[in-house]
Length: 483
Image 1 (cartoon, rainbow, N blue to C red):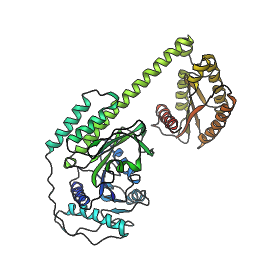
Image 2: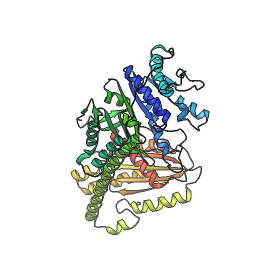
Image 3: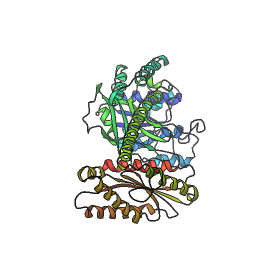
Image 4: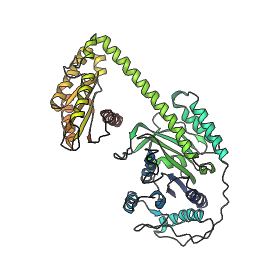
């Protein structure tokens, strides 16, 4: 039985006791339990921490973790939230069998605990027993007998010692090829944790209050401990479907786990899951682990970006050397196509946004990538490559006739249009698909194929050109990976 327990935070003493009871019940009933602390539907410290809402992204995984049943502490998660918001939250879990810890009109709840003896521990224990019976029999059982609990909370110094070991090992040393994730898992193994996993998206995904994120169906596993053994991955084995994440760690054997999201600012980076041990009940211990993993993943991401930027600089240097046309790059015009170059595009794009992007308007941003240009240059020479670039520029001239567009790199074009017509991006996508097919059929000697991403953004005073271009580029990278 695979059970999800959605709670607010382990720093809440009552929640902590509920988790103690639920853990004991899961062990007694030989179930798999995943505790998911996502804090609150309405953030508690929004002014002090504007990204507090990011924690609740963990709740979105509850629909994909292949849970047989969910237990939701809706009163605490929905603290300060209106009743309709609570109902909306519960309804999003669809057809998954679900029980709430307290009575909620329109939803089934666990049996009330009729004792003051370890009341919250009893509630956690009762919830697991009720959930298992509920799935098997489609109804609630008679209340469980009062249980005794002998949980001994660990000293905070023990948890602090583990955080110190992990932090020092990961943040003060340099490891090759993302080896740091395996080092992290190895340290946890030495501390008695036999199951854990760090999972990251290939690209960070924007998640804001206004623009809620779209969770991908797959995620890349950076490290995984199963039954105390570190997984050795083949090159193509790291991609994991979200509905198989729990199974990949538990292998179907009973166990207690806790999961939390990795994020930086407005961006979701991934997920960390580990066995639920006594240390997890030390205030801020689990959050500290999440912070360390986030720091390591951010360093890894920045190193990749730095490498990519260096490669782009070398590419520009080579292009400048080959073209011998520095003045062309200083001006606004692209020497080859006659249209805008990078400088010209961004200059006009910023002006267009400033003057025309207003309430009721929509910004359409497109990236077009000539994936075959390098092969054309290598096989047929740069003159033929230049002819291929001009052909693409002619296509973009016809498709995006009234838009601002320019060649921002040797093989990349960007487009911007401000319109009051919602959904216009779809017509651009259809026309680009038609022109791309025509381009393929017209090229007899070689394949001249375009990869493109066209995104539409509603007006938002906080939305910048940089953010729109970045999101469009990230969407293009996802399209490339799926092809």
